[in-house]
Length: 477
Image (tube, rainbow, N blue to C red):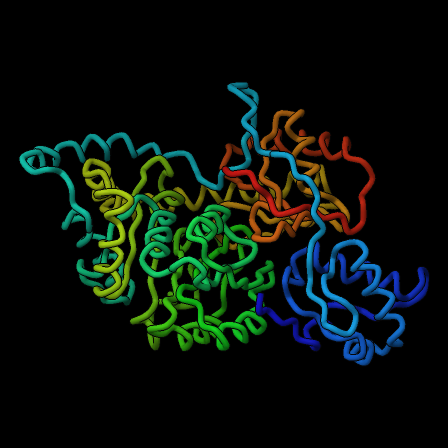
């Protein structure tokens, strides 16, 4: 992989060894933890021994010894003098997300998706009334029903993004739209930029397309754009998927300055794809940054939208907003996968969109109440954990602390009736094992009970193994 770790960036992440253990052991432990946390990307080249020694103000022999320890443990590949790259040791991984059966006491914290609103059954009934005029045809509309495409286009236009129905393709969710874009644009071996950590199924789609991921590091503090964009400029990816609004799983929001940088990089060579699945689920006030598909570069920005998070995941309706040429190309690629999005569900979506502005305040209020309740329960029951407080979206990203494995916790939690998705599931390379995503989509009482069970599960864990890592996960959810 052609990823390079800038010397200044690495020196900023590390602090110089001081006191206690021998200096080279401290340095090795610090580098190892950066790898495990995903802050040093697997495959990245690291500075030479001489360069790092100068940047940290330590002897070259200290760095040489530290690199030697990391090579022995499997965290570096390459030989001395020939350059080294970040790696992860191969560790067998069991599936921590196996279904626990039909136990009604099971608390499932794997899905960041809410239950349906009470208004949905009435909207479904109203949608059925629009079905008879469609029954005389074959019922297949590869681009989507025209009234629904118009309604989606009107919603974009109303927020300052003039859009026509010809720029809309109706899909079976945002993930379906991403998969179609990969089919249309990413030949095997093509480079595709994705965030890390990110939504697991988005990574699965990249792997299924046999594309090469270019990783853009994300944490609750923001996006590590500089290292990724340096590689991007050398070899532009064909696609770049970003979630600038309440990123899944970190909850981060991309600032306007960074959005503008990405707009300038959008081109005929790189389609920038922005996933707005969570964009309207703001909890602490409306967004201040403009949508990515505005202003300069907007002609090569594709937007994915969906009703799965704001309404109900069981309503498999999403859409793709793009230049007309992109819509046509994706529609052609679609023929090898499915013929069209189900017509009845599109009629339901049309009814939902007509009432969405009335539904959203209640959806936001419920999510806000559950977020705050989950944060309060964690502060009381598990005060050593460090969760984010996202300004929107549907999940917390929790730092369990150095040496604590979310994979081990996931296994322990199963015996206490809680189903979790561990941090490595959100990565390409199996890092971020000290992190855990906790959705706040269950009722408040269930969330509080889940935290009580997690406290019991955490007590079952052995003492932390500092720097422990897991291999790239192989399970699916």
